[in-house]
Image (cartoon, rainbow, N blue to C red):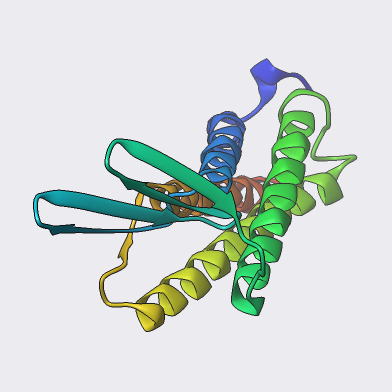
Length: 179
């Protein structure tokens, strides 16, 4: 089976899953999951926090520091975020193989694994976001969710879409061969 014989759904998933991976990696790596800002006496100060470090900006200077002590809930976010990266990367690799190399007749397990790992990655990314949002709002009502958080959420949603596309393609193939 080659690329030209692959279904449109698999070709779309072939684009969606690497995009999901890129978005989630960018969100995971940047320190803008939460942000807060305040002004007093003509001075404005803003802070951002991510999974790996926090930044403070004020008076024209910006200081970013890695966490000295990592709280358990941040460790959980880090772990689920990394597992999400690994699962979506595996799904993207499997999707490339399924779209370009493998045949559904002889490698059906690879097609199933591609969809399942995409769903697993999406689930881990969403769990990361849920934990972060819950704890950030618990810590302070002044913290707003920021763009890094949004990038990871977008990556998780796209990973889920990639899994759905692969699953629908499998179901369509099963229905067509069953008739």
